[in-house]
Picture (cartoon, rainbow, N blue to C red):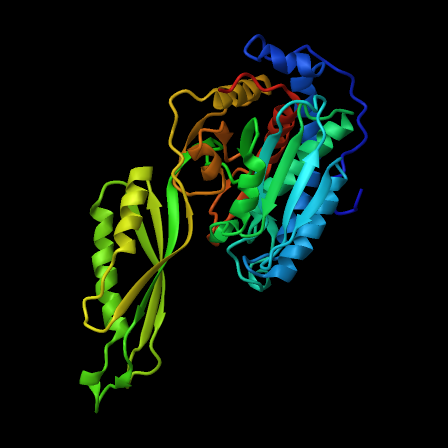
Length: 416
């Protein structure tokens, strides 16, 4: 086992059953391992410090989306850590950073696999660590990417290390996909995720939990759209009438597009604008990148159709819409047997846990939208993703390790 991986201390505890919650725990949980709840809780508490250090180590490898050398360095480190817990690791080549596919054998290899999804890219540019180092403050681990989602990656490694320490394997085969482009919509990672989604019994996402620890049971749909305008350059003083301003056209288009938010279920953020060359030149080109979020599939289809049919206001100008990435809406489902199962496991471990829809989107959208039993937010508990107050609550590492280990070890109920 690498010196940088999660290394549990030797296990000497004997199974215990006294003091566990009574019949609130499902029979499956107590049958999977003798003294399962107490054993997992105790060992996870011991392992939490190693997982915190592992999260620190991972976060100190900066991995902005698109930076292939840095992403590949972390992919190699992750593969080494997961391999030490019993996984086989394969790299899936990608120009902007390799993805990872990891497989752990289960006690019942004939069962459909449990699919876990994560990512190792972050929104933070290289060099952020120079003025925002990874450090512990008042029970919180702070730093770029610690919550989204180096913490989730470290927690799953800790859960597998815990099972290995107990001489156990997961109940069924587990496959994990770690993509390198999730923060930009998984334009290539989506292909890989959909490939391994086929035949999966259920999908678990390692995105951060809600700040209060709740899991994520639904997500809005998203799309990234580039709006490009071509005009005609001209001298802004001598020949202004001969020019067609791409910037003026883009501004008018963005004002019109903003009206889409008056439709139910659609939110819009213009995240980036550029164009033109000089103040004395009529701009020949301009573009904007728009982020959209949708409460329903209907709102998503309606909005994207509207954007696809934009026409220029100025004769001679050209407007083009390009969907850079999109994820379907994952709707809330009234009956959620996977959430019920996880809540019962949490109760057996002495934890109170629930779920709620989330405003953000992720790769789990793809599974949830298709009706595959899916839960997200099984990563670290904290707050501030994509912001300078991003942090992980250290006191919640142990409970999450125990919960993930239980999810892996205990048989799934009938989910469909």
